[in-house]
Amino acid sequence: MSQAQNFQNHVRTVPAFHFFVLPVFALNFIWSIVRVIRNFSFETIVYLLLSVALILLAFTARIFALTVQDRIIRLEMRLRMQQALPADLRARIPEFTVDQLVSLRFASDAELPTLARKVLEEKLVDRKAIKGMIQDWQPDLLRA
Image (cartoon, rainbow, N blue to C red):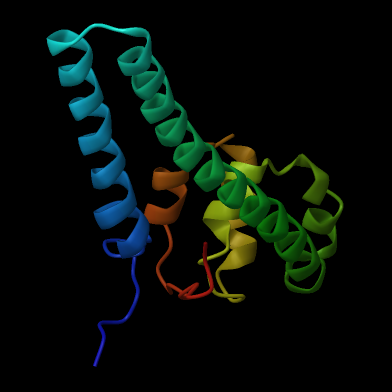
C-alpha cells in the first residue's frame, strides 16, 4: 500500500526520466568530453554537441510537459474557485498567478477561500510557502 500524498512527499519523480534517461545522457556527455580530450577531431566535437543537444532536448521536453500541466491546473483552479470562493473573492480570481493557483490546487474546498484570501492579501508567490499552509491536503495523482 502506498503512503498518502502530503506536502513532504508530493514531488513527482518519473523513474524512467530521472533514473534512466538523465543518467544515460549525463554519462554520454561525460564520455563525449573524454573523447574530445583524448582525440580532438571534428567527429568528437560533433558527438559532444550531439550529447549536449540530447540533454537539452530531455530538459526542454520535461519543461514543455510541466508548462502544459500548469496551464491546465490554472484553468481547473479558476473553474473550481468559481464554485468554492465567496462572491468577493470570485471577482479577484484573475489576480491569481499561475504559481499561486498551482500551489492552491492541493487545498480542500473548505480551506480554499481562507487560503486564497491570505495569498492575495499577503501577496504570497512562493509555491513551497503556499503549499506549506495547507492543512487538509488533497492529493493530485494525475501529474506529468
